[in-house]
Structure formats: structure tokens, C-alpha cells
Image 1 (tube, rainbow, N blue to C red):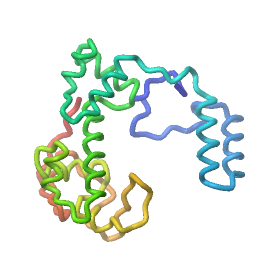
Image 2: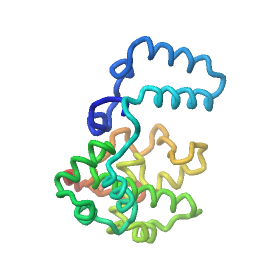
Image 3: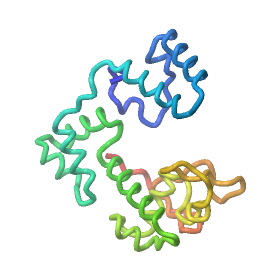
Length: 207
């Protein structure tokens, strides 16, 4: 761990490195990164520095390793996994969030979206309804909502921008004037594949 704080304390936010390390160590790392000739070298320096600052080895509870393996399966449910590792539903969510940085429910959503994103990348003209069913979504609208939540664009927008040069696992940022704004709709907003807002928003479920 880089800090004694639980991982979920830092989820979806930015933390200044000076808040975790001494100013001297931060300055030293900054100088080494600036002097590095390539991006690959900078990433290696950063990784080595992160490992050097671990407060304790990267050791997870055995129950969490088992849970992560089960949650990676599309058919798994949070309740079943919690029961399988011998924890109450509430305690399992607390332990999982503290170690992973997100709730089990959100982890499942991210896993499902990553499967859909990978399938879409392998098809020249994705059939979104079929892809949604294959990846465990209730319907195409369900897939669209998660796509907007995690990628910031609709599936159709992604298909149009797929030729742009981006890193693996990333999506192109919407062009100025695109129908996709820089503010993401809530998870419950109904949006069609072309990017038209259905104006029916529901509150984000918690979990």
C-alpha cells in the first residue's frame, strides 16, 4: 500500500503526490522523469518509485482473491460470492471497496463493459443488440447507458471514431461540436445509439 488509507478513499479523484510522499522524494522523481528520454523509460521509473514507496507488500485477503476470480465470471452475483467467501453481504462490500477501490457491483459493471468493448473492437460493424445480449446486458439501451458512463460517448459515436489513432483500451475524445457533451448523463438516462437523449433519467443505484 502507498498509504494507510483505504483504496476507496481515493476513487474517482485526484490526489497530489506531495500528500503521500515527502517533497524531496517528489522533486527527485520529477527530475528523473523529465530527464528520461522515452515514455517507456518514464513509466519504468514511475513503477520502480511506486514499488519503493510501498508501506507494506501487496497482500490481499485470500477471500478477496477468491472473490475477484468469481466476479470475473459473467454469471456471478455479489450475494453468491459474498456467501462463498464466508462474509455477510455488507461486510463483503466494505472489504472489497477498501482493497479494490470500488464496490463489487461497480466492479461487475466495469468487467461487463470491458467485455463488450473488446467484442466491439473485434467486429467491423458491431451488432449492438446481439453484443449486448452476449455480454450479459438486459437490452441494447442498458449497454448504451454503460458505454456513455464509462467511455463518455455512445456506441455509434465510438464506431464512427474507431479509425482514430488511440492507445489500446482507450476511446477517442468526441470532436468539438459533437452531440456528446463533456458532462456525462447519469447511469439511468435513456440514450439511443445515435446519441439522442431520451430524457428519462433515474437515480444511480448504489451498492
